[in-house]
Length: 197
Image 1 (tube, rainbow, N blue to C red):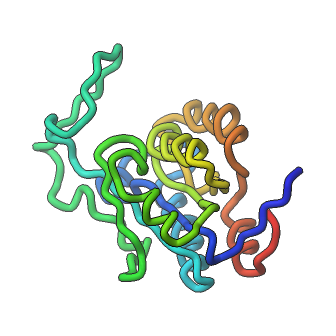
Image 2 (spheres, rainbow, N blue to C red):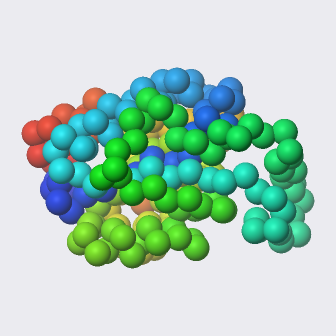
């Protein structure tokens, strides 16, 4: 197995859609509160060790800036029913001025945003990634990052989906081919001790 060492100045921690309107939903196999708790642990360790933190959220769709191809199972976005703080990053992530906030308007955090530009300006080549939903926002971002050539570490216990089946499928068939899959404890230890993962 190839060696991947966490080098703080070349690493970014990216959380996907850990915001009030999304984390309020029932998730599987990890509860939203557990995903948030684990993500917050990684963010804290990252900040303390000079790793760039990126907090990604998604804005409510109004039908005008969302993707609109013809599909079999088209989502229906009821933006009128969403609260004013729907897109707000949860307080447990403890957003800091030093963090980069990226607002996306589709599944992935790279398309249509400045994420790749900001990572490359900092000479970052490795991403620690987590969030909700495993098979939508996180998977799409991971696929995009892979195609851009980034090394990736997925914090699998800081991810979850609407169903356990969706989460497991992405973990088994997608993440395993484009990233290292690790648990929060292992990632935090690797950050703190700058060891291989």
